[in-house]
Image (spheres, one colour):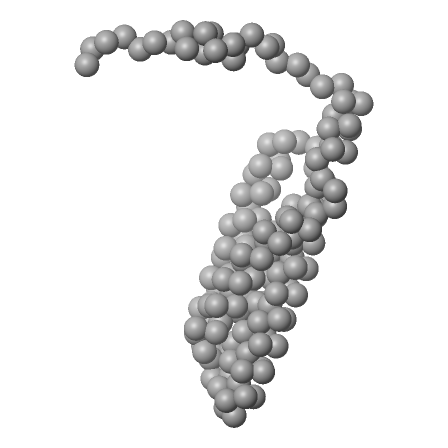
Length: 157
Protein backbone atom coordinates (compact mmCIF):
# COMPACT_ATOMS: atom_id res chain seq x y z
CA UNK A 1 0.00 0.00 0.00
CA UNK A 2 2.96 2.33 0.34
CA UNK A 3 4.13 1.84 -3.24
CA UNK A 4 5.07 5.03 -5.06
CA UNK A 5 2.72 6.27 -7.76
CA UNK A 6 3.87 5.91 -11.34
CA UNK A 7 3.91 9.47 -12.64
CA UNK A 8 5.67 8.66 -15.91
CA UNK A 9 2.62 7.31 -17.71
CA UNK A 10 1.78 10.57 -19.49
CA UNK A 11 5.31 10.83 -20.85
CA UNK A 12 5.37 7.24 -22.09
CA UNK A 13 2.17 7.52 -24.15
CA UNK A 14 3.23 10.77 -25.81
CA UNK A 15 0.60 13.04 -24.25
CA UNK A 16 3.19 15.66 -23.24
CA UNK A 17 4.98 15.69 -26.62
CA UNK A 18 2.63 18.22 -28.21
CA UNK A 19 3.05 21.78 -26.92
CA UNK A 20 0.03 24.00 -26.36
CA UNK A 21 -0.68 26.13 -29.40
CA UNK A 22 -2.49 29.47 -29.23
CA UNK A 23 -4.80 29.99 -32.20
CA UNK A 24 -4.56 33.04 -34.39
CA UNK A 25 -7.68 35.07 -35.10
CA UNK A 26 -8.08 33.41 -38.53
CA UNK A 27 -7.63 29.90 -37.07
CA UNK A 28 -10.18 30.63 -34.34
CA UNK A 29 -12.70 31.91 -36.90
CA UNK A 30 -12.14 28.83 -39.07
CA UNK A 31 -12.69 26.60 -36.02
CA UNK A 32 -15.93 28.42 -35.16
CA UNK A 33 -17.07 27.96 -38.75
CA UNK A 34 -16.53 24.19 -38.55
CA UNK A 35 -18.33 23.81 -35.21
CA UNK A 36 -21.97 24.82 -35.62
CA UNK A 37 -23.42 26.86 -32.77
CA UNK A 38 -26.92 26.39 -31.39
CA UNK A 39 -28.83 29.50 -30.46
CA UNK A 40 -30.40 29.35 -27.01
CA UNK A 41 -33.47 30.95 -28.56
CA UNK A 42 -33.80 27.96 -30.89
CA UNK A 43 -33.83 25.66 -27.86
CA UNK A 44 -36.52 27.82 -26.21
CA UNK A 45 -38.57 27.75 -29.42
CA UNK A 46 -38.33 23.95 -29.68
CA UNK A 47 -39.38 23.68 -26.03
CA UNK A 48 -42.40 25.92 -26.70
CA UNK A 49 -43.43 23.84 -29.71
CA UNK A 50 -43.14 20.65 -27.66
CA UNK A 51 -45.27 22.22 -24.94
CA UNK A 52 -47.93 23.22 -27.43
CA UNK A 53 -47.95 19.69 -28.86
CA UNK A 54 -48.40 18.24 -25.37
CA UNK A 55 -51.25 20.69 -24.78
CA UNK A 56 -52.89 19.68 -28.06
CA UNK A 57 -52.59 16.00 -27.10
CA UNK A 58 -54.15 16.74 -23.72
CA UNK A 59 -57.04 18.55 -25.41
CA UNK A 60 -57.67 15.66 -27.81
CA UNK A 61 -57.48 13.02 -25.08
CA UNK A 62 -59.85 14.91 -22.78
CA UNK A 63 -62.27 15.50 -25.68
CA UNK A 64 -62.27 11.78 -26.52
CA UNK A 65 -62.88 10.89 -22.89
CA UNK A 66 -65.66 13.46 -22.66
CA UNK A 67 -64.13 15.11 -19.62
CA UNK A 68 -63.07 18.62 -18.78
CA UNK A 69 -60.45 17.82 -16.18
CA UNK A 70 -58.22 20.82 -16.73
CA UNK A 71 -55.56 18.67 -18.38
CA UNK A 72 -55.07 21.16 -21.20
CA UNK A 73 -54.48 24.04 -18.78
CA UNK A 74 -52.15 21.82 -16.74
CA UNK A 75 -50.13 20.93 -19.84
CA UNK A 76 -49.96 24.56 -20.93
CA UNK A 77 -48.84 25.67 -17.48
CA UNK A 78 -46.25 22.86 -17.37
CA UNK A 79 -44.83 24.07 -20.67
CA UNK A 80 -44.77 27.64 -19.39
CA UNK A 81 -42.94 26.50 -16.24
CA UNK A 82 -40.10 25.31 -18.48
CA UNK A 83 -40.18 27.79 -21.36
CA UNK A 84 -40.42 31.07 -19.39
CA UNK A 85 -37.43 30.33 -17.11
CA UNK A 86 -35.46 29.07 -20.12
CA UNK A 87 -36.25 32.32 -21.94
CA UNK A 88 -34.93 34.25 -18.93
CA UNK A 89 -31.69 32.27 -19.08
CA UNK A 90 -31.41 32.75 -22.85
CA UNK A 91 -31.95 36.50 -22.48
CA UNK A 92 -29.32 36.74 -19.79
CA UNK A 93 -26.78 34.67 -21.69
CA UNK A 94 -27.15 36.43 -25.04
CA UNK A 95 -26.22 39.80 -23.63
CA UNK A 96 -22.67 40.32 -24.80
CA UNK A 97 -19.74 40.84 -22.48
CA UNK A 98 -16.06 40.41 -23.17
CA UNK A 99 -14.93 39.41 -19.70
CA UNK A 100 -14.78 35.61 -19.18
CA UNK A 101 -15.25 35.97 -15.41
CA UNK A 102 -18.36 38.09 -15.95
CA UNK A 103 -19.71 35.45 -18.34
CA UNK A 104 -19.22 32.68 -15.75
CA UNK A 105 -20.76 34.70 -12.92
CA UNK A 106 -23.58 35.83 -15.20
CA UNK A 107 -24.33 32.24 -16.19
CA UNK A 108 -24.52 31.20 -12.53
CA UNK A 109 -26.81 34.13 -11.73
CA UNK A 110 -29.18 33.50 -14.63
CA UNK A 111 -29.25 29.76 -13.98
CA UNK A 112 -30.14 30.34 -10.32
CA UNK A 113 -32.85 32.80 -11.39
CA UNK A 114 -34.19 30.23 -13.86
CA UNK A 115 -34.41 27.58 -11.13
CA UNK A 116 -36.04 30.01 -8.69
CA UNK A 117 -38.68 31.08 -11.23
CA UNK A 118 -39.46 27.45 -12.13
CA UNK A 119 -39.85 26.53 -8.45
CA UNK A 120 -42.04 29.57 -7.82
CA UNK A 121 -44.24 28.65 -10.75
CA UNK A 122 -44.66 25.12 -9.40
CA UNK A 123 -45.48 26.40 -5.93
CA UNK A 124 -48.29 28.65 -7.19
CA UNK A 125 -49.57 26.15 -9.79
CA UNK A 126 -52.38 24.84 -7.59
CA UNK A 127 -53.73 28.36 -7.09
CA UNK A 128 -53.37 29.50 -10.70
CA UNK A 129 -54.50 26.47 -12.74
CA UNK A 130 -58.15 25.42 -12.44
CA UNK A 131 -58.63 21.64 -11.96
CA UNK A 132 -54.87 21.09 -11.90
CA UNK A 133 -53.65 17.68 -13.03
CA UNK A 134 -50.16 17.19 -11.59
CA UNK A 135 -49.32 14.15 -13.76
CA UNK A 136 -50.13 16.06 -16.97
CA UNK A 137 -48.20 19.12 -15.77
CA UNK A 138 -45.13 17.08 -14.82
CA UNK A 139 -45.15 14.95 -17.99
CA UNK A 140 -45.32 18.12 -20.09
CA UNK A 141 -42.43 19.62 -18.12
CA UNK A 142 -40.30 16.51 -18.66
CA UNK A 143 -41.07 16.47 -22.40
CA UNK A 144 -40.17 20.16 -22.71
CA UNK A 145 -36.92 19.69 -20.81
CA UNK A 146 -35.86 16.62 -22.77
CA UNK A 147 -36.60 18.13 -26.17
CA UNK A 148 -33.30 20.06 -25.94
CA UNK A 149 -31.67 17.12 -27.70
CA UNK A 150 -33.85 17.71 -30.76
CA UNK A 151 -32.69 21.31 -30.94
CA UNK A 152 -29.10 20.06 -30.90
CA UNK A 153 -29.81 17.54 -33.65
CA UNK A 154 -31.42 20.18 -35.87
CA UNK A 155 -28.51 22.58 -35.71
CA UNK A 156 -27.18 23.98 -38.95
CA UNK A 157 -24.27 22.11 -40.48
